Image 1 (cartoon, rainbow, N blue to C red):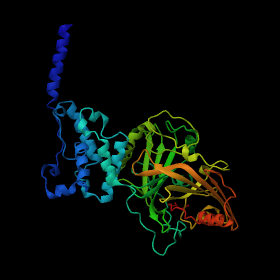
Image 2 (spheres, helix red, strand yellow):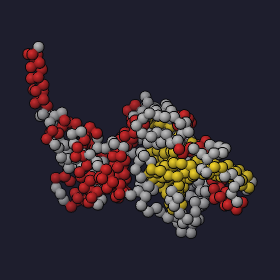
Image 3 (cartoon, rainbow, N blue to C red):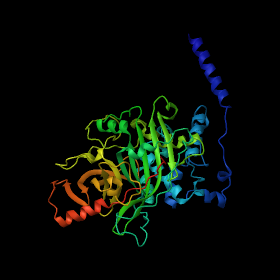
Image 4 (cartoon, rainbow, N blue to C red):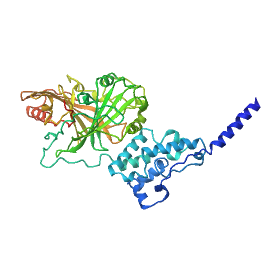
Length: 466
């Protein structure tokens, strides 16, 4: 027995010695070899203290300046570290990102901070032997302070326009005859404009509003708290609009930017974490990505949420279900409507969204019988049903989105306001967190709120020719 063990040990030593010579190189581009002015210019454009944090915590993998410890040089550790470095560079390279626009550089940093906050970066297995790459609370605060998502300026509404969210309609592009599939073959699903609201976010990192809508399967799953995992056939649409600020201080949606689709199919999309992914830009619905590899951006970004079935969205849900997982998965507080509210606005169709930064609130307007989200109509009432409209404006306080640095989401309900418009006559009711306030408003105040709500500008959306 002893002889057999010695032979096995000897064979192991021989194999270990042999594999030391199987050593594929790690590309070392000129930017890392020659510290030229051009090379320096290719680095991220950020203050010295920010670059110092990135150099200490990130450059070992996310740059062309890798530094291997002595134990990294030994096989098979070398193969693993080499793969980590090449994968990291492909995702984000701080040695070359300086060639991109400033907005793209900051966007990469926002994602990096979100990954750090979620515990996904640096890779836990990497920090086991590379403790110097762990991101301290102080380092993270340095990056957050530099990004300061809510300090960036917001475009102002054009001079001479309306003074509030009640602006004239945005121009609507010609209807698209047919939207091409995403490069991975996922077809565009234009029915998303009929879906119901699952969540909404105010993005300070890129000054956009995002509405996350779901098909009937997704909405039912959210309402019942059955999102662990999401059921087969669930579909999400994340639609984005740029923001602008009106003279009276409201932040409102402006130009439509893009819509992203996620389609659940565990077997069909097994290679991409059980989801089909696609993104279409602009009113022309141009598919995003040069080829099918664009999906790597999607799966790479969503990897930290694998415990949430790869879904960042924390959907509205009154189920009260307790999902025993590592992260928050249901937004129960946002559906605790004031006592006496006679309807559920989330069963209606979202028309527009706005925030009031002075009050730290976010509001979504819903319509009972709307055919679709928005559409560029001059007002919510006309987007709804011509001379008849049932509208509901829900206002929440905002809180930070725990899944994404730089985003805010609805928290506690402040009020629900309802307007019934019929042949030019409006009936107004309001329900507040302090209790039902129906009929308490003065006639003048009720008329002013009815006018404001009925004239809110619907969001702009792409349309397919029928």
